[in-house]
Amino acid sequence: MLEIVTPTSLSSLSNSIANTMEHLSLLDNNIPGNSTLITTVELERFVNLRSLALDFCDFTAEMARVLTDSNHVPLQRLSLLVHNVSVMHKSLDNMPNDEHWKALSRKSTSLRVYIMAFDIKSEDMLKILKPSIPLERIHFDSYITCVSGAIVDLISRQYDKFLTHFILMNDVIDTSGFPDLSDNRNEDPLVLLAWRCTKLSLLAIHGYTVWAHNLIAIARLRGSDLKVLEVTEESIDFDQGELADQDVDPVHNLIEQVSLGLGQPWHAVMDIESLSVFTEPNRHFYREMQSFSEDI
Image (cartoon, rainbow, N blue to C red; front, side, top):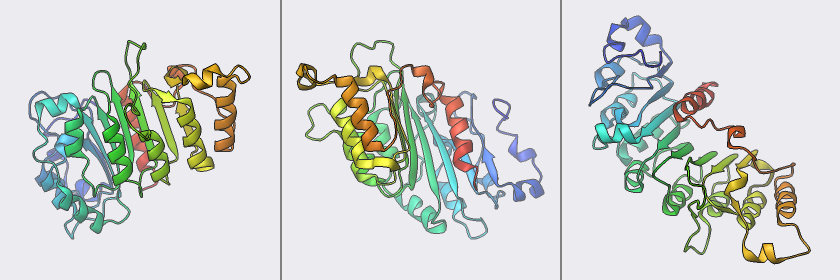
């Protein structure tokens, strides 16, 4: 019930309904101030919950503790939307620490987490990305705050055993200069991500500079296991050496080499509207959360 749920909605449910509910999604919280759509006391009634989707700021350490109680079935899927507006109005002070995440993972070895971060500053992401989160999918979307190479590097180190989906979107109006994650680095963070995260099956990038030789490296590293590689044409750049070679068309060579690496025909996404990733973040989160939880 998008934009209809209020802080009193859950308390109106009978215990019999709360006890049998397996999926709970409380999104689009447009309530101003510090209101939350669910309290820890309410969550205690949902003993059969297998899939939960919440605003990240509403998912507290106390909620994590409740979900590890012996009378609750193991949670399988947790989808969390981290929005800059929510972080501004609420707080990250009550979020689960690493010990809470470890306890959740012990309770359910099959727990997987999907996070979508919208315009979140790097210092806040460093607080959020606890090492023991079983993070399977992460989606960064921004108009103002770009993701840093350090954050991408951290993700590839901490979640190499779990990560399957990595989405990087930067919806800037000025396309004259996209941020370059490999700037002043010996190794490109996206290449390292492809190298370390051996389960990576989807990589989508728009609004960040992706060098052609790095794109080829990513395709070769993950091969046919990388089922989806979506990069907008305007995000791809070529170094001077590639452009200077008169005998080789750099664009044709890129298409050929990436296709060979992936073991399937590949081409850049010509139009941002053609991306499988919705450009409207809330809609995409809702759709992705449903597909993430559908087999539970």
